[in-house]
Image (cartoon, rainbow, N blue to C red; front, side, top):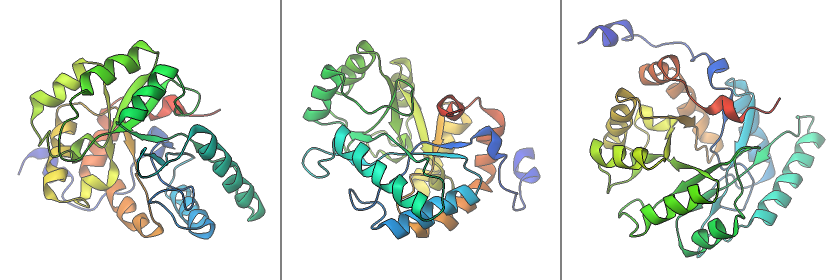
Amino acid sequence: MGLFDKLFSKELPLVDMNRIKVDMHSHLVPGIDDGVKDSEESENTIKGLKDLGFQQLITTPHIISDFYKNTFESITEQNKKLNAYLVEKNQPGDMRAAAEYYLDSEFMQLVEQKKLLTLGDSDYVLFELSMIEKPYNLNDVIFKMMLNGYKPILAHPERYAFLAGTLDKYLDLKNRGVLFQVNLMSLVGHYGKGVQKTAELLIDNNLIDFVGTDCHRLRHLPIIEKSLKSKYCHKLVNNFELKNLDLLKH
């Protein structure tokens, strides 16, 4: 057991949330993807995340052309309704919305048309890939995103089987300008031990730029709380200059 493991062998307190503040990946707009099902669950989940210390939330519904047919307009409208509901329930109606884009043909069109929902007031765009195989046009899409002024953030890179924890593949993506967002729940094995080990590999090699909850359900809150006490979350937050604060709305 190394020195780091000895120091953090006992359960830790929550990380210093002032070094994160913003959760920039979640599915909290009710009924439009595989996230929360209704406004009540959304309200309770949002309250739970804020109780854990997140000061601002940017929720990111899926946009998948043949499955979740959300758009810039529909997400914005549904998020307005959610904020109005929160105000009715005496919660601050300050939820912001972006999207988690799946790399498909329609995404490429939106990139070229410059019609992407970005995170907050930034140029950052959250996107995801097939969990199984590398898209044939991945490098072209990355290039086009950057050419059109976007800063690509790859959601949960630790979860893609085709990358399989191989450092060279991750370094190639980083060298192309891709930023990485790790899921907090990956740090405690929620998606399996292999995913956890890959997340640890990325952290050990200083490759993570953002952290996000990827919260889909009220029942995810205890897992997120556990992850915020994990040694790798402490290592990540205390040792890295994470970019979550770039998204903070003042």
